[in-house]
Length: 323
Image (tube, rainbow, N blue to C red; front, side, top):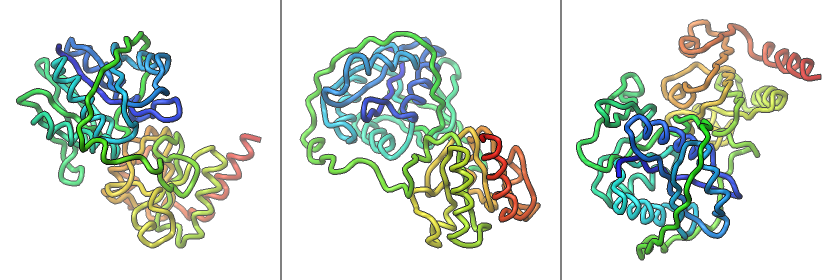
């Protein structure tokens, strides 16, 4: 059966944004190659028919549901390997993130497949998928094809947009015999310390702070602005290394990848390592006193000036507008 199989992670009755992006992308690509768009979900009784069927809104035509500990990589590898082998899917697509990388790597080893990681875009050429991924610190783009099946595609976090396309999904229960090693781990605690209650990976508005803030106290400006706009605060590696802000808020090559509707960069120079983590933002606004700062090269709007004067006035203006 020609088609694309994706994995959807759920928690507390919802599928996360990153997974829905992968499902949407898989559905779009499956249509282009004339194949089926299917999804694997792994969990317990909380995976109801109604919840699984919601994946049809994002283009999935079939949802394979397997019993197992949710949130762990091993059981998902077992389930996806069985579904791929039983149904001859051509490709497996993941939205990225730590779990996506773990499952994708495990599935590659299990099936002796080809894999491409940190994929930012997927296209169709001659009826086959070609993955695009940045190389050389994002200075070049490489096209990667697959000479055998299945091809494993692991996207960069939030590289694929979740788009509702309508439709209904058939739910199929799959009996999976978990490997002995897949049950050796157990979930002790879910989540991570982010330094805030907001998940920066899902935030639609982000205010990023860099060394231009001058000190850890400078982040109060970012926090006040983010709060006024209903957004979250992010940070560069330099300020995280300096202890000004928690690592969980770090964006960039060694941090998180985000794609908000608005990314406001305050005092951020725009080094390539930071750029790779936020360049997919819909709108980028930069405030920096250095008119030659690299971030202005890829910003939609740049303001040259003292952020200590500009950011408070912007916060006041937002509050006044909302008031």
